[in-house]
Image 1: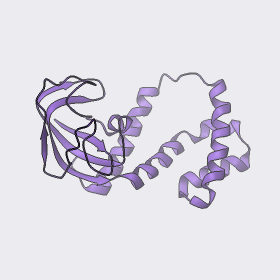
Image 2: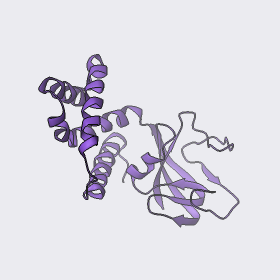
Image 3: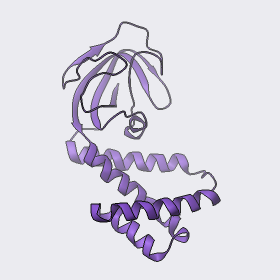
Image 4: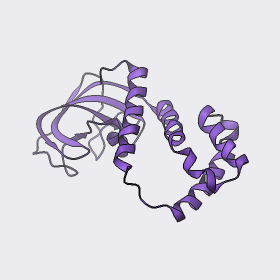
Length: 177
């Protein structure tokens, strides 16, 4: 099963395992895999893998052997690392693009000046205005959260975000995903 896995930048397995992750390497565990308990995990969708990311290093993997699939991740007794890269910059850009998708929802909760500042930061990533833009965004988000209700379109939004992230990773790496 082709999937995605994030590791820390040290590229070592967690949970007191410590084995080094390298392109082409296959890790195996001697157990019956159980979701969230034991085995080697990964997610078929990038957006799902991101939810479990302990760090920015993204791996394209193949889960093999005994595999147990869940809604947003799977676990196996073998995981082969096809390729990987430090996705920190890509994830930073993704977060700005993802925020731009819904930026109009906070318009009524902030001043025009603050709104323009937030949009400028999200479009450019200009670190000189980052702090002010974050402050304005948090203020608007808190106001919006007090009056918001949960959207029925949430799963569609996750699909849109997964497509955006997948397209960005494909463009950066050339992976056939």
